[in-house]
Length: 120
Image (cartoon, rainbow, N blue to C red; front, side, top):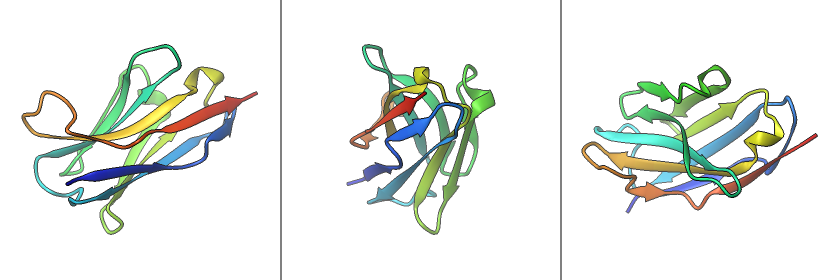
């Protein structure tokens, strides 16, 4: 069973960079045909995809956030990270890491989510 766990600060100041890590167990992040993603949900809104890194290391970003988003991975630690720069209060959300297998139409695995608040 694949398990994901987000970690990182719950409070970030405006204009700073948000950094979150997703620790993965039950599967290697280099296992072929897996895609590892970051998704967020602002209060009162739906889920928003931020970006994905494939098992092969290819990275895909949401066009609307591409200029501020960076996703990377550390296979030795079996984790992948999200960095979101120049945050504003609009970036307040619950941030999730999620994974899906190639061919899945939805995410197969989710982390529990971590609340991030942006202070003035």
